[in-house]
Amino acid sequence: MPVMSPSDPTATGVRVVVAPTVEDLDAAWAVVSRQLAPTPLVASQLAESAALKLETMQPTGSFKVRGALAALDRLPAGQRVITASAGNHGLGIAWAASIVGRDVTVVVSEHASPAKVAALRSYPIELIQHGPDNDAAEAYAPTLVGPGATYVSPYNDTVVIAGQSTLGRELDAQAAGPLTVVVPVGGGGLIGGLALWSRRRRDVHLVGVEACASRAVSTAVAAGRVVTVEFGNTLADGLAGNIEPGCVTPSLLGDATFTCVDEAEIRAAMRWLFVNHGIVAEGAGATATAAILAGRVRQVGHVVAVVTGRNISPDRYTAAIADG
Image (tube, rainbow, N blue to C red):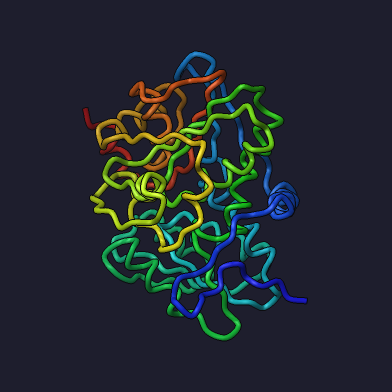
């Protein structure tokens, strides 16, 4: 029997997305652990008893491949995938499609990262650039869904969230508790998955870090509902924009705390990672490190900063780490 998407549109136009179950988390782990090697956890002088979880070492340069693999594995054979992305989720979907065999359409904004667009063009997918920002691309992508196609959100999708939780399952074998896990937050898929994982473990405190220019998830958590926020340009392009009406991720995050980092702090963290570890991180990927460097994280036990991605053009990267 075909597996139905948990995020089919309703008659109201607001998609109903349910929280992953324990069975969803276990199924995602079975898929991801079969296809992807655990990413390294490396000791760091970032703080006392600190380590970096290097999602930059994923085959697409970002953690997003976890959720993409889980989602595509669950879809019926022959189902076309439509998605919107700031870039890294699209790369994850494209890579996963090459493994499990799916046709893919990825919608990104007209101002998406050139490095991510160039990487997407290296895959045999349909790539559409639409609209001035991530919000516009995300609103457009579902309109392309027709018979034999499914929309897979980069964050508001049951199986995608389950896939992101697998990062925590790797930490089970890599890090003794108690743990403070510091995570970049855009749409909340990664921190949502880790929140579900942490309920099994009970000795984990999650800290979500947004770009101060874009705070959709923490605003929704505080308000108890999704609200539209103003957002500005940020070097953390993967975190910029609003979240979908009815998005499930804020409802998963009751025990997490939130902070934000500004543009100078993001650049300083990118520079620190390069100078101290030789790690290339894009702006979004460096925000957890930035929050710790800025003293905005209350550490309980060991601290793990998740470095979520590396996909940035050389010219933008060199300008960022040279500044200041």
